Image (cartoon, rainbow, N blue to C red; front, side):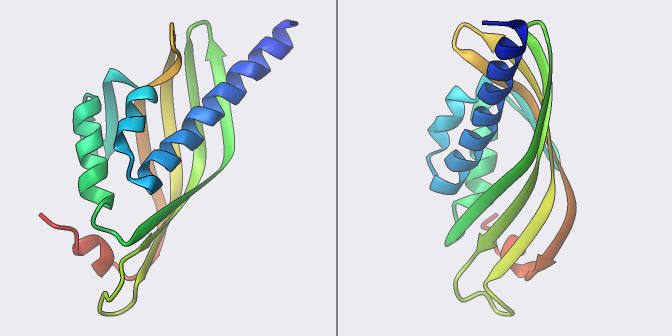
Length: 147
C-alpha cells in the first residue's frame, strides 16, 4: 500500500467514526459511543462534558425525550499527523417531538470539530466540539427537554 493509500484509508476510517457517532445518537444506542470516544474524551456541547460517561449522559438528556432525531453529516475533512488527527464535518440535525405547541420540528446546522488519536482499536475521538451556525423551527422542542 502506498502512503497515499494509507492516508486515504485513515481518512475513511475517521469519516466512518463520525457517521457512527450520528447513528449512535439517532438510534438511542449511546453505548456505541464507547467505540467512538476515548474514555477521557471531552465533548463540548455548549459546555464541556468530561469523560465518556458524561458525554453519554449529555446525549441521553439532550435527545432521548425526542420522538426522533436525525443527523445528516457532510463535507468531511481530516488532517493526520502521526497518531493524531484533526478532523470535522458539517452537520444538519432534525429534531422531532410530537404534539409540541407551535410545531413538531426544530432544525440546526453547524460544524463538528474533532481531535483524534489512533489507538490499538483504531481511531478514537479525544475531543468533539459542536458549533451551531443556524437553527430554525420550534425552539420549544429544545426547551421541552426534561430538567
